[in-house]
Image 1 (cartoon, rainbow, N blue to C red):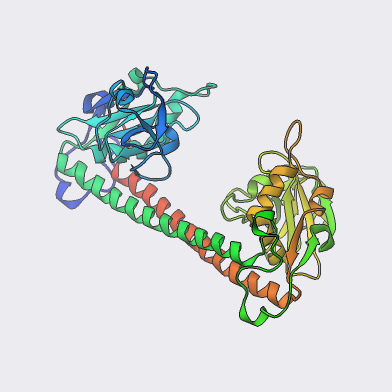
Image 2 (tube, one colour):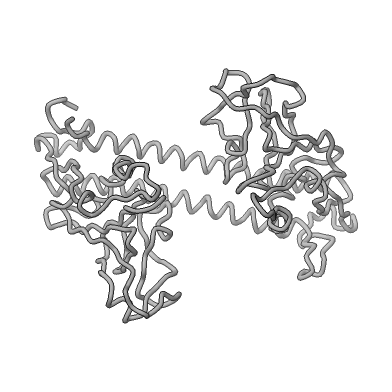
Length: 421
């Protein structure tokens, strides 16, 4: 892009001779409405048609098509009503910068500004433009306890617009089609995860009283149907070399020694995230090195109970002090790890971690966690192979989505020119 002209690096051929883009304030291109909670005794409720949208209803999607929270007819009449197709932008709170469009007429709370483009401008283009600049816009709020961009400041935000409505729509169509691909792939990922969750509910016995204290799973591979009941075990019985991690701060990655902290365990995949590697800033002792098949647990804080199975080959990984290591013995490590992904385990974590202060589970408590294992390692392996194959699909699908998002980000950088400094 020329330093003197406001022209994007990427431009569709039919618009190459359309000339320079212009700069416009948001208040010049759209009607901006700040949401409000209705001042009426009529309550919010679930069910019905009068939708009430808050930031919690905006997830990683372009369109907000439904919300659980609705208003009575009276409550809705007391609100500022938002027309379908408007762009919704969170301007207050920790989720400032979240963006979506509403598929239906709705009302919004005061954390949201809605924008409805004037006739010479496209709502879809406005969405894509704000999406591309959401982080920069969010930074206007500063580092206050409650970040906020008031309506006046929001209206004065300056952004680039092509003069042609057709060019606006072409850009919007290009990006929205990519959003649809990302949404479809995200839906596929959710379906795979749901399939795995349902499979686990059938591959492991449910020992709860409500299920009658099962000692065999609902579904069992045919070759093991006559192997008898599963056996109750404590985690401490199937593990050795149990210890806390090294008490050291982190430093920049030295290219060889990796440091696993609670925050490095991906919340969704439970894999060791490799995008922000660090090394331990302390004495490197072999006793803190993870071996293939080691199982570690977060022992304190909001992530207490989070588990990670070490499967990285040819990699020196040290584990940090807020993690506890269990080296699995005489059993299939993945099978034991899978027991920490069940609903029963999560219930146990919630109950066991309760403290007067910060939640926590120590090594002795983890050792007492009980679950069931089949009589043969062959059955363990069969279950582990089945579930780990789904993990591979989940990881591959997540990587595909990440690549699509990177592609979209690069495309937006090319399709929208940067404003003159």
